[in-house]
Amino acid sequence: MQRTLVIAGVVAAVLLLILANALYIVPIDKQAIVIRFGSAQYTVNATEKSELPNYGAGLHLKVPLFDDVRFYEKRNQGYDLDAAEVIANDQQRLNVDAIARWRVKNPLQFFRAAGSEANGEQQLGLRFTAALRGELGKVSQPDIISGQRATLMQRVRTALQAQMNTLGVEIIDVRIRQADLPEANSQRVYERMKSQLQQKISQYNAEGEGLFASITAEADAQARIIVAEANQQGQRVKGEGDAERSRIFASAYSKDAEFYAFYRSLEAYDKSIKTGTPFVISPDSDFFKYFGSASGN
Image (tube, rainbow, N blue to C red; front, top):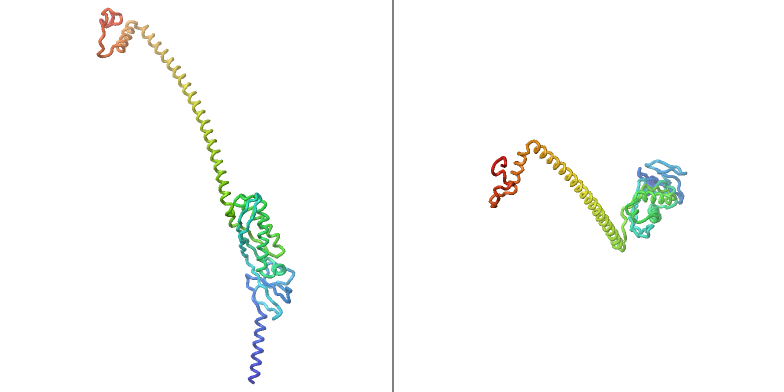
């Protein structure tokens, strides 16, 4: 009886082990391939359908001891490329740090070409480096650093996608996180940039001085013209004033010649005789004839 229980227990354990080995679960964020004797039998929850049957995620049954389940990520994954040295079209060297977003689109094709995800990532890294160097080598250093970054990333993604199609991988995006000059080149580039900036400063200073001289000369010429026109206008106005003054004097003289002579003599006295100035005159001088009487007699 005891022996029967032992045998039954062993059989039950074996059955449980076989049953446990026959059941497997594929989560919604995973995809799997069932392999038998090294040959793929069917896919589970695959992103892209293939010639093999495909089943949904969840609990599944496989042949114990004969079937092996290979799991792959269904979500997008990131690949951080180690800093790679790139030679630009102008023969300048750059250390480029880039990242790619990718996913296993066809698990059957990925299994046949790469086998494991680790091997697939290794191939991705090699092809990523080749695509990066190939596309960035077609443009100059300034375009890599800032000028055409978005366009270049699109070209690198296209080139990398063409190389990864055989692996059943989709390249979602490619980004350059940093592009720096090697340490040996930094000082030389800095000195060259400094020299170029100094040349621009000298050019701007020369242009500014030339513009200043031109503006100053033009302003001086305009000032001389304005002064000359003002003097001419002043002389004209003065001439008109003198003419009007003479006309008024003539008109006044014609109305009362005696009063006009008296008024002109008083003006002459005011201008010529200053307070406290002693002088000797003849009493019958014609200049002082109005000292005796208002009529000048």
